[in-house]
Image (cartoon, rainbow, N blue to C red; front, side, top):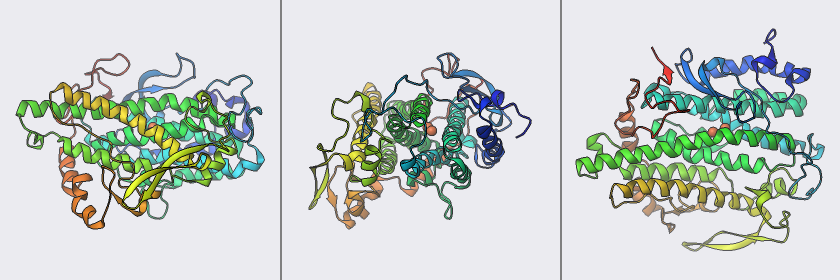
Length: 472
Ligand SMILES: [Fe+2]
Ligand SMILES: [Fe+2]
């Protein structure tokens, strides 16, 4: 888009004004991005004023400025977390060497692949969520949806910045390809499985932001440890935004649980469907589904790629710098799952190829925290029930358990038992239809759909009944 003052239009701390080559690449990419956004971003609402948070700098005041903006006018910024003076590589074969400020030639291909894989998830989730605005349970929730959508858009910018600034012509080709793949498309699908699933309703969306965005948090956190400093700094800043997405998921499901419990108490029944609520059994099945497809995103238990990324210094462990070991892991072991007849047991495996499993373990522990909080809500209503994470082997398409059927309590079972019981464990067609039937838009300011409780507080100190989206 010639004629635009890019430094003004694209808030950044990457010296965009002084980098003609990068400016030119972005000038070419920006209109294509906008075309993608209008075609694949939120359906409807593009002309509406939305009360959004925009990052205009990385300091405490600048990174969260709230105001009304129309989504296509959102200022997609390019931000890196502040540099750490004298930062060194914290793990792998290059441990102790100065962090790379440029792409190390021997790792160029691998690094590009890592960035593209991360980058691909950002527009994918926008595509998956594009129809949801039409069935929002409240204007508050509508605004949060759009906040997440524009920030995933900005995360795409963040990855495109790395590709354009550091990878030359093939980087620019990858930037284009990121706009060409489509979630769920048979010919040009997104790279990772969970990002080709549909997000057909708001319950799925809240589950996605809790479970699948959380995979994003763990991937970003391990890339934030990268020896390639621009990637590390980019991911560190993205993590601050990602926290809000996880908040939307955790409080969103918490509010559904809250409403379900209220209806159970009021109606003195477990069958809250009669009262227009979402019963705990259905919630459990949605949890089972979204958790299991998100577990797949971490890859196989044993992975040479994971070992290589680590040894090369490109992708660390979660909170690598806080760990007290040799950060090389050549002689260490890690406990992973093993199939033992019809049981799943554990064995010690070399630590390096087990890094996916280790990251998955960190993720699982983090997931459990939300369930504990939701179960608190159930308990407060004096209801004798509990939501649970299914066994990690349940409903897996990748890794050890992909070849067998595993029950939520971790037994390897027969195909026949699986077929007989899967509808108790995963959302059935009738569950989906029921949830779909609840998806009637509620757009009156301060009102909420019957199946979800209002939030405890509004956004940025505003009241819950604030006009978060000007729909009139
Ligand atoms: Fe993201
Ligand atoms: Fe996200």
